Length: 374
Image (cartoon, rainbow, N blue to C red; front, side, top):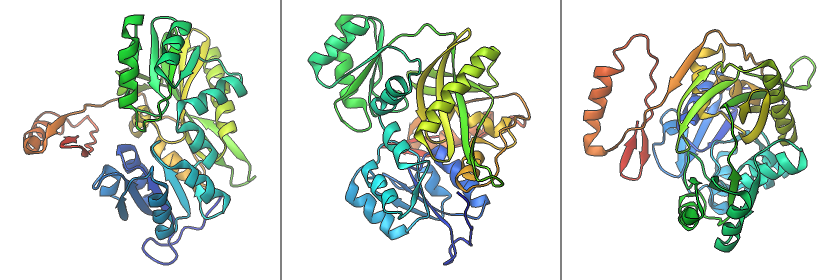
């Protein structure tokens, strides 16, 4: 698609409604604003990172269909850009069907990737892509059977969760019931269903940022890839990433083949974070996010256009450039503190991090109940 971008805060404004306003969304907002877009940011709580820079912001329960519909009717956006999974996706399907707004990358993609069952069945059963062995379970009894079928150790994840919430590694049968309970309480939305996955013996895992954008000359949608990003997680949380990740040419080609099949099936334009396991020349599909990925933060330092710029340009129908200009690495440090201790934490950052001239530092103030994430 191509668009005519007017002037923010005027009747000619081109409006984007961002659903989810975390630290990744904040960078998307900045990239869109640099291109002249009026951005409206929504989340379940006030003053989320993206809200701090958006033109307008709203706090609501985005999983509530009535609240979400009311917001869309109020904003009247040209594009709706989801940043999280906990959204009433059926509303987005209806909005797209009625041509009220364009959902990025598509309502189908958002609906399928909002839970692990939808995307795993698409990848493994419809597209025939290599994945770990898996079972789905929605009762404690079926969960016990699934764990026995898959074997030990295995990994348990709620079908709707992120950043490691509700996920665990089950080493033996004695840990099964505790893993079920943790999955039920740790997911973003309590749907009851979990996925049990076999453990893959891999050398490393990568994120292959895959960009689908329309060629302005031919009008055809083309696929481009950023260099592979290696990363490390701790209990499902992003810790560090680097670009490029060294891998064989055969493995890289297979990674691109898998990423292409998945993203073409999902449809639409934008950036997709395709997560893959790699061992030698062999590659397995893990997950995909139809939006910028936390491991892709490294592209702020490594590429001519970061993953956030690529996403913004792709959804606006502008040319993209996935070239890398340097080798880079990034890391995150989560500091959860009581609000009364905030000044101490900020002082520590100023003394030890911000004074290092060779470091690029982003501080994301993110409220988590009674604490602050920086």
